[in-house]
Length: 263
Image 1 (cartoon, rainbow, N blue to C red):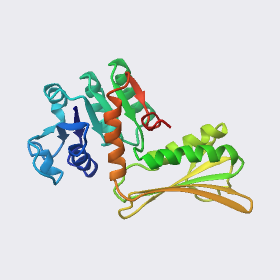
Image 2 (cartoon, rainbow, N blue to C red):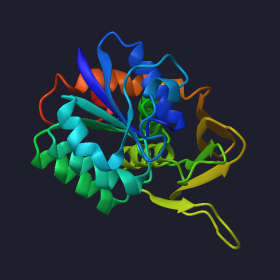
Image 3 (spheres, rainbow, N blue to C red):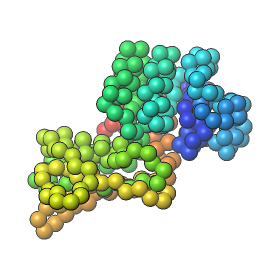
């Protein structure tokens, strides 16, 4: 059985990850970390039965990970926290599943460096949904045939999401750009802004929208829209737990969900 820890265990995503781990045939919860509810039962914080595992302070990350013989840690927090905590986790020889979005190139370089220097294994992805990763594959193929069409990406999320545009929208733009030989990105438009040879990226924030992503290929007299809609955060959590079980059997290195799913 794989010992898995969760950081941000009392947040919406973290609590759902804790719950999903308890139903996994491959993983068992070894530790839970947060800035709040320290000392409380992680199961109760996830609104399930008590698990006998207390929520630990993030400041105790290194000590608790070593004490609990944790194999892999799942992190769906925020960029400023992940860039600090991931090197600590890697330094403990613990593998990583990172779903944090909004990481700057500099932050990603710090995280990647720590993973490679410590010889651990990691999956880093802006989206752990199986459907979204198939969506990436579909838009890659479409872009090859529609490279001369105008391309726009529209994403929508709940009003509490901190980063914009979403990591998934940025990944979609990268996938398309790579397929067509490079494109500039324009984030929204205002004033006099004639369309050039760019990918337009637009973010909508409102209500409790879990996550919508649409790629629009617009040509003369026709258009193609490819869309993925998430109905529940469970799709991200199930993918992350699947990745956690998968990564522990791999060679040291940094992987994507394409690798996990064999895409």
